[in-house]
Length: 117
Length: 112
Image (cartoon, rainbow over the protein chains, first blue to last red):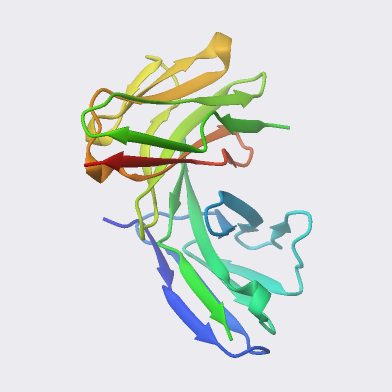
């Protein structure tokens, strides 16, 4: 079964509105979660690394004021797309990092398809 | 910095054909290696992983991958593909404590 839950799976919004996407690790605590963006027929593009209890680390070229990340607990990270515009339409995917001893695996959420009208 | 390359952008095979998808990485130290699969309309799923030990790793659905340290490679193989294997396959690498780096992906189309 799924170990990472992402919600909503699809959202359609008007230009200028904000959209919040949730990412939850279901049966483990994740001190680190990641947010990716996937363009059609392209690979994953890492947007930011979300660390529980501290500020997110954004990749170069990603606007931190536009893509707000909050990782308030060990099982929940949220991505808020503020003042969304049509060019923000994309598929957003989160993942949670599970580490135990030498084990280090990322588990992915099902993704959120954002369409900005 | 780490990087991951995948040899093929798009592979088209007939059912029962054998599959090998190439993956090479650049990093001199100890790495963990992964193959993820994304079926059409679905999320990324872990196919198999290598942390240490036997360099030949067996995953789900009959897939296997071989880690060849001297070649910095982690190629994915399946002796006989099925139509249901049609998907996008991503190779990923991470060094201990560092971020994952994904390859650009290889689209596999299996013709019935």
